[in-house]
Length: 349
Ligand code: NAP
Ligand code: ZN
Ligand code: ZN
Image (tube, rainbow, N blue to C red; front, side, top):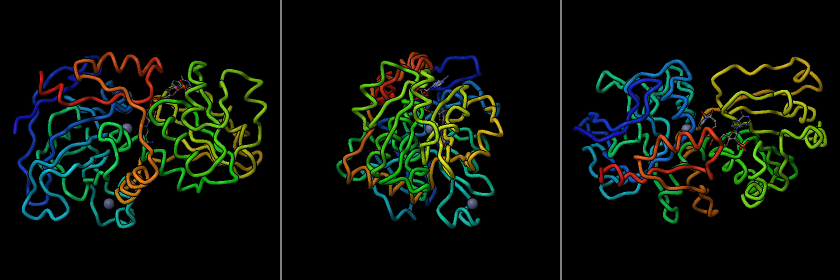
């Protein structure tokens, strides 16, 4: 089925209208009309080949909320008219040890990502949510619980689960001092979740203009990370720090803030390697860790948690024709705090 989309045709090309092909639903597939798609910084890294693996044309977008239009004959969990979500994954092997634990993002034969992954149906590569429709195996479709605003829920599918999962894995909660580095799409959800889980939350930002927002979103304290004295005041005091930064920065400055056995967890994925000073890890016995999105069961758990606790993303809605301007603004850290594309704008042309 020919489907309208926005695509980058090369690393240096802006996104532009394109037509892609979506398969007709097979028995286990769910066909979805896309209503909203969040704009993740990963979309920019991928469209611009900053991870050196991009397949073109590249249709980004993995924070998808849509309405089911058709289901295949074996689909039991969804029906036409349902409001559903699709995140960063559209397939995996289902049988490896990680898939069996619901950690499909770590499928040992490689998960199929929503864009830039191998498409076993077409033989080409997958295309993401900057498009009017998508067809996904029912196992990789999420239920959107009643009570969540569909547009504000879209970024939960990546920014939400990417911050929820490590905070849960490292058991962040009451009595702990937890840092979140960077107040962008991931960071603002990290602050909300860490606060909801009961931790003492400190936001680290390079943007003086985000201090009040940081507090409104749930941080007990906000530190301007360029202020060496303010950083030094927190030395050796953190249990856990979630680093969401998308560009070069000094990780050692955050390692210095951990206490014994504390952890800095990277979720930000800058293009260049980060330099880690050995002594920033070995004294006094610290951990530098990482985390990748979350599996399907945990993503559903996160959506349900958000509905139950009234948590959603702070979004700015855009028309798809403004996507390149939105990318420029994200790169200037000028997003409050996630752009979401109103996909009706693609139909309007
Ligand atoms: P974003 O909205 O652009 O937020 C990143 C924030 O980092 C900015 O708002 C800014 O916050 C801070 N920042 C930017 N440049 C900086 C610099 N040079 N030095 C220090 N701080 C800087 O991006 P996002 O969508 O949240 O994504 C963040 C990163 O996570 C990206 O690299 C993305 O690819 C990655 N990611 C990883 C996963 C995963 O599963 N691990 C999933 C999704 C995204 P302040 O203005 O507050 O300083
Ligand atoms: Zn993402
Ligand atoms: Zn697997």
